[in-house]
Image (cartoon, rainbow, N blue to C red; front, side):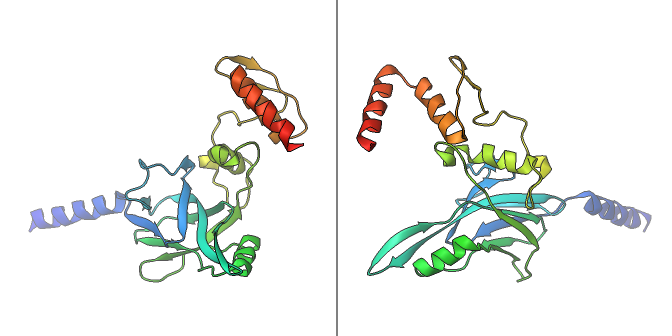
Length: 218
């Protein structure tokens, strides 16, 4: 009898200290771009589009909604701006979903006021904080993690301070550091600074081809 009571007590103590986890999946029109401050790589995803969450932690994902929509008599691919979704983990499985977009009007309306829904497997909607991640600079998708880190450090409405990195931003006004030495750039905006940075990173042949391309754009 004493052994049984002790075993039950131990089990209760163990269960109180364990963080239960659920699995997060998405609807077919939603893709993960980042998970908890990191790029959504295969190492983070359990399968093609799912990952585990802990019920004691706040989680943050960046998602993109993609749909083939009607555009007049044709069809075209719509891709939304990156959307930040912050929510509390749960021991239930979760589904992150977006409404089905049928045409250009639906797509434009969604881009203006994007709405992502997070629900448990039992159908309960989870409270979220959402925002659009503004992307700046040359090749913005390549800098998504850096842009997200800056967003989290700025204390925005869907930010999570724990996911803010101390790494240097992709472009700092008046200065950039590259593997082959110190490179100084100047410009009135991040895009201009990064154009200068990547131009100086390129070899002579690539620079010549780029300059030729620029002349053709005038």
